[in-house]
Length: 262
Ligand code: CO8
Image (cartoon, rainbow, N blue to C red; front, side):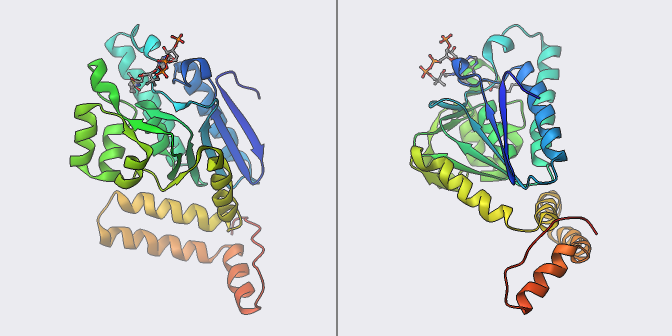
């Protein structure tokens, strides 16, 4: 299916979704959320896809936030629904059974930073700009940003960004731990692809298990998290990939992970 506000490219084992409203710096509107939601469902069903990349089309922007022209026309109830819509779509990225990498190629402001934080980690161009500027519009972040940023960098640093609405450079975002790796703009996609390739060579069941355990464990205390890890470890051991991985090590060869369930 083709979309108007995003582009879905599949080159298995990697799928890439580009936010594609370059004239509005890829701002997020309702139509884009509908398409993103559908594209995520499609990616989920592609057995051969093992990594998802999210990036922005055009040179300038990953996503410059929610579409302010649409936002300005909403009544409070519509705003509440829109906020929840965005939260659910970004939570869907977080809950994908495959790793998702944000390749932040430019502005990642408001909903843009929130989209990137829904991914498992962020690589960014040295030219990228990050921030939660909603306070400048008399608002607060509404697509999960207050919660994800506070968990990512701690509540005090998150509050400073939310209260001041100031934009920070890619270097500052890297130092705060928002960004895993900084790349020269022309090298960004290559670096992201390199890491995606490393990930895609692993077993799909183990990737899914590792993601699930970290995410569910982070919502709880250490002991409960270890119990979750323990249960999922046992299940993962039952997968054909686990048998292949351990056998390949003993036979001194590269594993050939085929995915597949138990
Ligand atoms: N929404 C709609 N249009 C936008 C947006 C946006 N967020 N950002 C940029 N645009 C449009 C501009 O209006 C402009 O359109 P036109 O050419 O028709 O005038 C075009 O994109 C290019 O933008 P600029 O000319 O402003 O480009 P600059 O390079 O000069 O500036 C900036 C780039 C700094 C990114 C600037 O555009 C800007 O500050 N944009 C807004 C950033 C922002 O405030 N983002 C947060 C939005 S609010 C949000 O994300 C809330 C999420 C939770 C919502 C909860 C639901 C209710």
